[in-house]
Length: 473
Image (cartoon, rainbow, N blue to C red; front, side):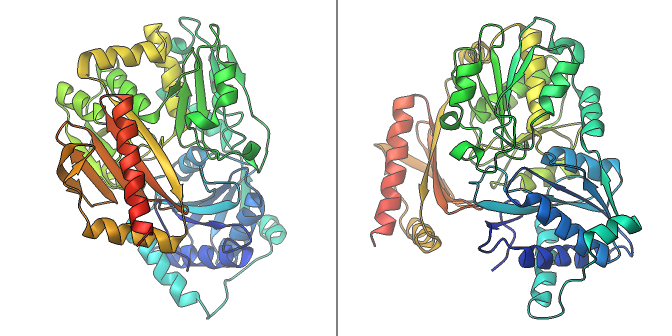
């Protein structure tokens, strides 16, 4: 069964993510685009994963076979650069081949709307309807890639230069190196290599880039910017380069490391950037966060008089608010953050550049800035654990939690249970626990936030016990 999840269609390479299925899904995308326009323009890009370049050429051949003009990146490119190209070329849509932060055995296809953001649920539902019509029926149209390039139907293009020029319009290049605080960039072997580092270097910043060659195995770890995956970055920061910036496999998510090697989570990054944009840049607008994102964002928004919108997990829901409203910043627990004045899209490289601007503006480390926030607005401690399991067991967990609502967790009463996306239990002391099956891989995630690390450990333990109880039935 091919379907679009939290962010596009993902599958295991050579299992369900095959050339044949890529052609089928691309044909469904083409069918959708051709319902609105006779000869649309499609941008296609790809990351550093195994076979991504081949999948991109196959998709370009299908689009060309349908009479659709294609702009294809001339090499591996990050998702934000491909998304920007959709807008820059006034294209009607974009396809990005990436499985983002998933394990190396996965690949995926993201579809971007003409505004450069994630496809909405109505669009993905329409593509799935076209796909069902194609299954077992007429095969996808196809034009040989080399012939399509010869005819000019497929045109390779440079995604890097226009994107970096766009960053220069948003980020204050003079501030990036004002206090001399250097940066270590870790693209985690992904598509962000050579992008953010080049931008920072061109602005005069002292930069080192690590894990910056193509490795489809991502060094044996998931290309997800979490603390447990960033040992090399933690060892690379120094007094001269006290800011470490990590990007996921397609560079649309961010994590960071402080001068002492401490991991700076996406929750802290979201909160710090919110304060910086409001207090120092004088920006205004509403705030959007997913249901698994820190309560510090709510505290800050209340202090600044900003409205907060809470959504299910998935940047496509944040994107819907950014397209239709005045949104200052939107973000999610997994490291995806977008801001006003750019695209309705998460962009790890832009956020990394803004972090470099911010630490040089204040001439303070991220840790020191976070401590200032907590002193003013309270202590927020967070962690997450992932439980791998087959799909059948994931459904058992959902059924069990739907029928058994805990009245207390760790001795504290449950005030509210939110079931919009998984099960989030808000407790009387302001802490919360959330259990949710992933929308992109075979895991159930357990999230928790509380006033102390010890309390977070207790909550996570209870969450895992709920999962075990469900699987034992």
